[in-house]
Image (cartoon, rainbow, N blue to C red):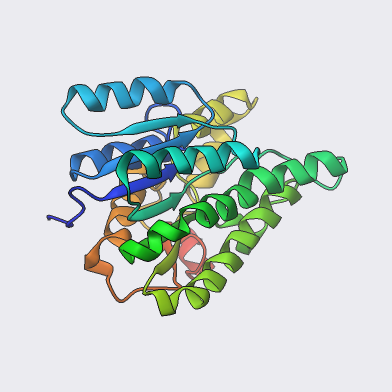
Length: 264
């Protein structure tokens, strides 16, 4: 399906993760659709990703940025604006479940908020003048932890709860500008980081099986490709009358009746 993203300048944060991560998968899908990805990330592997895209004839830019640093975010967005003269979409994809729980220091808790929520605010704040001109849209990547809790991760849970609040607030704020704002909510997705985490556990295989059994649809994790496809559809004009929504790409994990998980 042609989603009409060809030539659209899409700012995406957190897209220089490990190959196969959610952000990197969204990046590749954007390129496949003919969009112009503008990547904001602290990891230098973003240079390599963009170089490979450029060798394919795809216009792209990488701005290496510490997204906990307000000035670096401002500079990154200004660099993108200067190069392209427009921004059509912002995808906020930063997310690190950093384990800043109730035993964390004030600084650790605040750093989690800066990374996982405040960065979203700053990217949108600086991109907004060009989003208004393009009547573009904003997509925030959220987590089920905002709704279900997880334990031991107060900073991340508070951040992702805040991201959902910002999604609705911005949808109201920007409706007069015809700017749509939505959030994708992810539960359990099989990513390289998830694989690495499982491998650190003494009973990793058993833990993985217990998690997968709790996912109602097909008892499997959501793939990064499925999440990326949902993201691209949501930012496209195929979703032109969708705003202020929390879109769950989770195999029914959050909402469906627990009786589905009862073994017969």
